Amino acid sequence: MSTKKDNFTTKDKKFMKLALDLARARKGLTGDNPSVGCVIVKKGEIISIGQTGYGGRPHAEHNAISNCFEDPKDSRMYITLEPCNHYGKTPPCTKNIIKNQIREVYYPIEDIDLKVKGKSSLILENSNIKVKKGLLRKEALNLYNSYYINRKKKLPYVIGKIALSKNKIIYSDTTRRITNKISDKLSHYLRFKSDGILITSKTLNIDDPKLNCRLQGYTKFSPKRIILDKNLKINLKSYIVKSIKDKNTIIFYNSNNKTKKNFLKKKGAFLINQATKKNENFDLKKILKKLYMLGIKNLLVEGGDKLTKSFIQKRMFNEFYTFKSSENLLKENKYVNFTSSDILKTKYGRYKTNFKLGTDKITIYKN
Ligand SMILES: NC(=O)c1ccc[n+]([C@@H]2O[C@H](COP(=O)([O-])OP(=O)(O)OC[C@H]3O[C@@H](n4cnc5c(N)ncnc54)[C@H](OP(=O)(O)O)[C@@H]3O)[C@@H](O)[C@H]2O)c1
Image 1 (tube, rainbow, N blue to C red):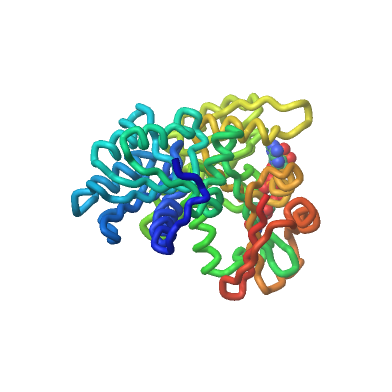
Image 2: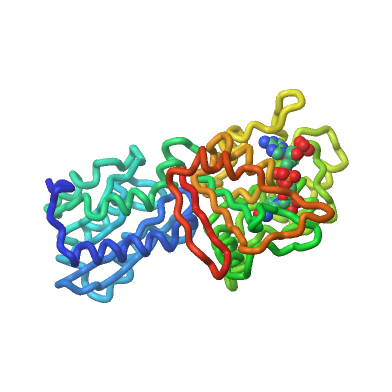
């Protein structure tokens, strides 16, 4: 059996890089299943590529085999994760690989799923298929960070973001827009890659946001809207309430307001009566656990200052984005400051990257 000490060629790396790019492109859009990329190579030429289907099926290996424009017999397959080897909703990919007489299979890491982990190489090698592991392992581990958190901790992978002015204002009633239109695209890309987007009813009532993905052609990938609304203060005339349908909105509450509850239920909201200790806010960890159970594997938090601070203090963001403009905002009338800059540096300062989008500066902090 081969190990990660195998020597890999530049071409091997190139093919695996392509497979990783394919997987990365669909990350966040494959439901419970990891996003996998697959490249099939015969006589040094790519004869097919495949990605995990939206929602998690078909698997990338299946798609790549079906897409082949040449018989895959005697080819080499580059997959970003150990192929599945058990019967689930689809037959095992190992079976498909064997049936199609693929000669060599490369994958960087084993699956964390115990049903799969470490078994595929034995199955494949028993059918005389050469297996090589460890190619671009670090890149693959990086790609599957969210999948690992999902499976190990039974929690969604949580990304937070906030837009702020140069003088750290996150809301001003004189200027709605803080950052530029290129930053908007990245914000909407984050929404596109998330299953759920979380805000409080306070922010909802002030901003009346749409919370959808407005990248052209991608609106159908908008995340579920999740509202923390302990006292059911949500404005029933807001855009979010008006656009509730098919359980696309989850509301956590703890209130006896029957009229409001019935109204929201009738609209089709998914209401969760979440217990809280007296005079305390929701336990965010419990909220995350529940969201995971409801299928939210990738969560975007677009909190105001207080909600964001709660997440930062508890180190509950896996990643946090600040979108900072180069302009100051006037401190007139109503405004809200971002008060977590220092604590953000203490809790998340070790791993961060910066880049510019126009004149805005984006910083990504990683846990
Ligand atoms: N620039 C940006 O990126 C951005 C993004 C979002 C919002 N904003 C702005 O931020 C402002 C609001 O910020 P904010 O700090 O005042 O409010 P916020 O963070 O949106 O919400 C705070 C309120 O939500 C509730 N809450 C917070 N944590 C909770 C928890 N763990 N469980 C249950 N409820 C919880 C509490 O309501 P109760 O006290 O009623 O329990 C709390 O007062 C708005 O003006 C909005 O425009 C800016």
